[in-house]
Length: 165
Image (tube, rainbow, N blue to C red; front, side, top):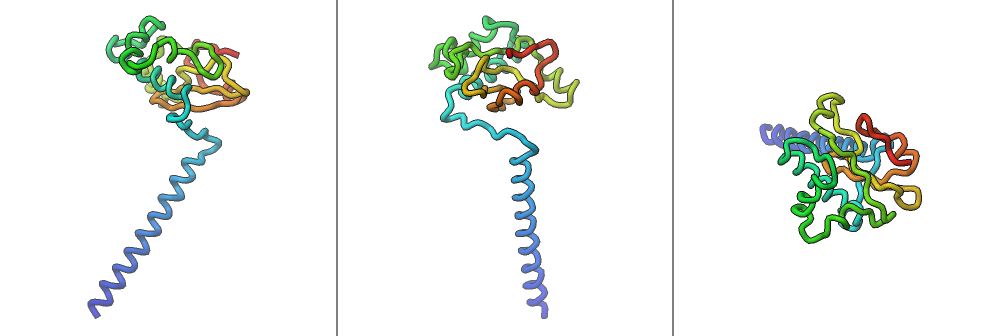
């Protein structure tokens, strides 16, 4: 009799465990799908995304080491040379898709924005023109998205920044 209880308990536990896994899978799937949320860009095969990741890393390092956000390209370049040592900073700062320099929002303190807004869901850098009606966009914490024109126009930017048309 005791063996049956163990088997029954074990069987119930495994069933609950599998149900828990199924629920977690469904929750993760729904979070990935999101409510119109954009899927992350495959960075490994996308040079523009790699450039934007280098820009994010350099911007973050500059903010930490300068104890203020970078105010200009001149503030950022020394840090780009560190994070992308094998690439010319001018190449990193230019989009391969539209051959224009990325638009970088200078002087943004993301910690202050996070405190004020409760999140850092704003655009830090983006392609000036993009390609085929889409542009790569960089948000803090190295989130890279590809937005169409309508999505870009409705994206959140730091106060005082007017995005390129």
